[in-house]
Amino acid sequence: MSEHERRTVLRYAGLTIAAGMGAATGTVAAQETDADGSVDDETADGESTTDESVTTAGSSGWSSIRGDAGNTGFVPGSTGPKPPVGVAWEDEHGGTFAVVDGTVYLVADDGRVRAIDAMDGSLEWETDITAASRAEPVHAMGPPAVAHETVYVTSKGDEPNLTALDVATGESRWQKSGLGSETNLSPTVANELVFLAADKVLYALDAHSGERQWQFKPGTVTTDDGRERGDFLRRDSVAVAGGTVFALSNKRLFALDAETGDERWTDGVDDWASSTFSGRPIAADGVAAAVKADIITIYDAETGAERSTVPAHSLDVLTDGRVYAVTDAEDGDRKTVTGYDSETGDRVWRPSDGDGSFASAVVDDDSVYVGLEESGVAAFDRTNGSGDWRVDTGTEPRQVAVVGDTVYVSGDALFAIRTDGEDETASDGGNESAGANNESTDDTGTESIGGSENGAADDADTESSDDADETPGFSAGTTVAGGALALEWLRRRTGDDE
Image (cartoon, rainbow, N blue to C red; front, side):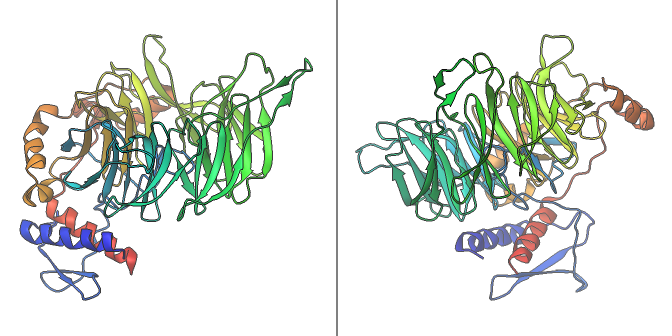
């Protein structure tokens, strides 16, 4: 267990003892901390308790802009909050973020980097990015990436750079400058390397020292008209899976060996003059996907052979057998999210027809979470598209993430959304801002979302019509006591380290 993790465990042990709250079953749990920092859970009668039904923040992570090194936007093993839900805590700073090991790392709009306790929203540390060449701090930009007990952050200014910060203190571990005048919006960390595009060049840096391992710059291409044309890498995150880095230029998708940077295969647009690649690549489980000429193309990650195409011009999420994309709704006046079978390209999922327009999507085992262009976030059942809940945060979302039982959404501020009641332990721990936000949860509330609009959802809804008649747009949910939440969090964190 790292020193950072040990301090976190001890802090939550204190919160749990102070709260003195029982598990959701009503059984009072007692905990003993061993000399090695491990925690033994016992019920009042001395029997061990292993309540696997309780999931907690920190049980899994969202390590980069789209959740993982493959940019999938998919979190297997998480099930998110269940209704009734509300805002557990709020941080007044907006920006982009990652969530790992119980801490939210926010690159705030003011250019500073903040570490925020994921359980109660309290500030762990805050730091400026400094550079040897400047007297004043530089402005941190873009989403962070977190791995190897390190937060990787890019910055802008006269000399943009990549800075590696210690997750526990925010102190600089190393800094790499001289990469170019325009940095990538977000680094990607995998295979002990940090991948970063700067000045149209992809760099692979040692994740522990910042030392350059290799770099890649696309060469020119001779097109059908006999002309030599240049092509430049896009300033967005690359995807890494199975030892391969997938990077997009305007006209090509490159699959590169992660260790050496050598090209494994390349695919290009057919019409060089008018067609392009767009968005960011996604890769996982032996496949890679990208938007090519306004169509999602899915490739065999090893060979580059085209497996299938999906009739959508954006690509948000790649799961086990599906892709999800923000598309035009049938009324043509707003955006919705559509799920497609990744093998056939057929539409297999569409959320219930709410009255809002959607901006983004992330997915876990149970739900599809969508950012609402107007304000807030909504959750839809991943099986039938029925609406589970909706929370208005009062700000248009820029990023949505799901980690364990919590949905995080950032806009002009950062919000943690949970099942109502799951933030009680954090409030008892003395966080005044968390307590204040609890009072406003009733105003936010959980809103109903309308019925399904696609065939697959209609069939599923027919089976559960009785429940739908009682509470349209909702699924049953239970409130989990805050004490049980903290106890389970401790058990899982220390159990992983043993």
